[in-house]
Amino acid sequence: MSLLMFQRALVELTLTPQKARALRLGDESILAGFELTGLERDRLEAVVRQRGMSVSCSLSRGNRLEMIFQSFPMTCVLLKPILRELVDELWTDIQPTNYQLAGEETIFAALLTRKLAADNLSILYLEEIFAYELACMELTRQARNPARNQTGTDAKLIVDFQHSPDDLLPPLSQLTTPPDGLPEGNYRARVMLIDDQFKVELIESRT
Image (cartoon, rainbow, N blue to C red):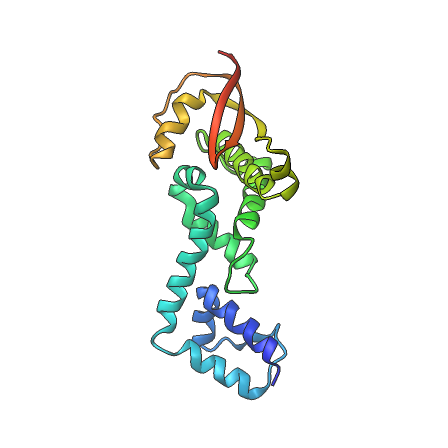
């Protein structure tokens, strides 16, 4: 029995409800990318027909979204009207290969970066808040570097805002969308990770 292929197929079906649903309806092409024995195919077809499969798919979808939300909570708040559509697109194209869901935030960031670069997303405050949370993710990664810990220095990055971070970040930290019509300008800020807390220090502002 090709155990590895069977496990990969089971993971993909559990983490991609659309494919589990298609196989349940008889679309055997869903398993075309896996080298499976007839017995393994039968077992997978039986699994997707089990009553608990839809619950497992819903839970796995929630777990995947949680991984993204942990890294990009403010971005997700701004994306709320289209977030479901966006993650559907992401998870249709890319399936994880393990139940730990490592790297979900990275592939989400890559998709969002591509869409912003192509001007496919026009959502107020999105680009600057996404840049801020990318910086926070990078600072967290740097903080885990043993070389950084030995020096005792605080990690920092520069982020350019188009609206004052003092107006944007407080409501978003409470998972509330900032009001429309905030004053525009150039706000260059230093983002720092100090004692496991993110600090934002305004360096320069021009309105």
